[in-house]
Length: 327
Image (cartoon, rainbow, N blue to C red; front, side, top):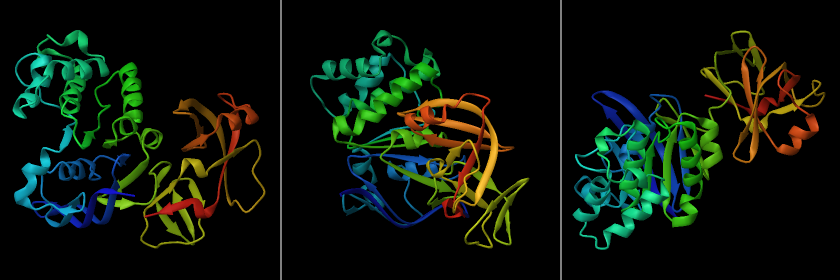
């Protein structure tokens, strides 16, 4: 396993407020990694650091085993492609925007490279259009093409699905799912859709309040612990161990078992509800159950057929106490 990034005792603060605190984090080379978490969790800050647009307030970043100092930022920045959540379009056409980076780097045979990325992202039709007059979704694709044409060692995308319609989302998902394998390069993207992150990435890093948490942040509840029970409104989750200062509980959607009756086993948490959504999720099935709160569950197509699930059916959500992550 080769790490393209290694972060040691990394801290980043805006003014006097610390927004990122990562003791140790490695990111694999040639793989796809998703950063998930709520707004303000530190995803964009981490991407800015990985893009060498910022320096950490404290700690070290290693890139391919080399410690990156503040004076090296520009050199390393050239090896990374970064797509901001709200990309800026330069004056001129789409073609002009994509060609500029190649010109700056003195690359030859620019036309075939540009034609390739235009076709790859299905935006050949607007090559001669003024980039600043495009829709938000089209500008997002142009900005991505602008990065891809330079064949960066690392491609960083900050919430790349934000301004896309559904058909464009599906096309970008397919592209990202195959990118690392097709190119051998590293892809790191952030998303607020946590299940999307798990579906597309080889590895998922979850952030909460600037720290890494070992949970997918799906089925996330806020509450308090009283006598080994996590209480969130009317929801009560039985725990094996309790951390007095924990205020959040999360259950991996793959650790939940669905059944037509409450399971009689070592599983201690059972909640009955109705099926309110069934959707394909990149080769698996997402089932949402409304028990008073919504539980998101990932199951196989075989399990779907065996349970014969339909919208409106009453089912039991079952999970073990040791499947609950507290933080």
